[in-house]
Length: 170
Figure 1 (spheres, one colour):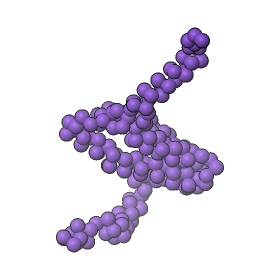
Figure 2 (cartoon, helix red, strand yellow; figure 1 turned 180 degrees about the vertical axis):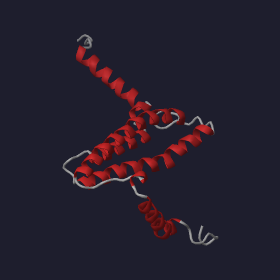
Figure 3 (spheres, helix red, strand yellow; figure 1 turned 45 degrees about the horizontal axis):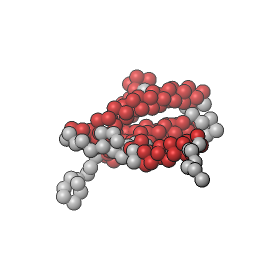
């Protein structure tokens, strides 16, 4: 019996195996943790646009998305800024440096915050139609502003301010 020539199918299988092996050793097999988290947060925001949820639940989803983004910047983005400032050349599992991750994050967050603003504008219209009005400081009379300032100083501010700062109560 002579040697069998490789068929096109065998060649294709070999190419797939080589491709799989290359991927197994490549950072391309990973998706960036920070970008993945931003995608998750965008899915939370999408729930704010889901009309099957009650209106105030949709407002809550938007607020969760905004709160999550604040925390993301305070914890994860600040850590990446520290790494970049320290000149660390470490790369994430997907092969990105801290500076590259910050660039990618900025692009994704620009879209996310734009979507949040669009969502908020739509929700404000729906809230108004439902008889719920969002007022700004300029929408209040002088007497209303005075009452609100006094209420804040007496009821809210004490909860936000530490009563004592010492080694036992940092």
